[in-house]
Amino acid sequence: MSVLLVALLGGLGAASRFVVDGVIRSRWTSAFPVATVVVNVSGSLLLGLLTGAHLFHGLGSTVFTAAAVGFCGGYTTFSTAMVETVRLVQAGEPARAVANAVGTLVLCVAAAAAGVGALWLAA
Image 1: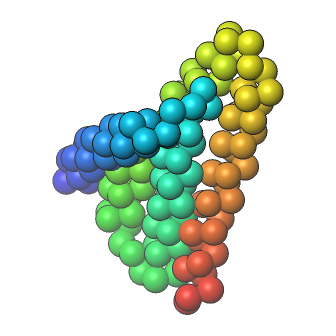
Image 2: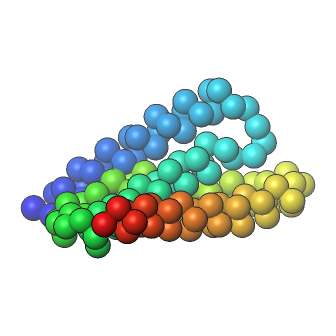
């Protein structure tokens, strides 16, 4: 049952990423990959909230695994972030490439920590 839930939520996460990415790209045209950063940061925040709910508020293991591995795994996209970083380098934009790689890492870790912290404080 867990495998089926992970698969279903993974598909939902991937579809959600497609929609969010498309909406952001249609409204924000930039050489910098804003849409992927937003997707990864929001997915990291959600993963932090799920982790906080699991650790401090009794979210069950099956639900946590399905949502964290399934939805968040399907929604976030490290590989796309790195491909976009390489493309920035290839386009002669090394400063933007570094900003993308380092900024994504810092923002994602901060978002995940904020999610866990918010639910730790609420415990």
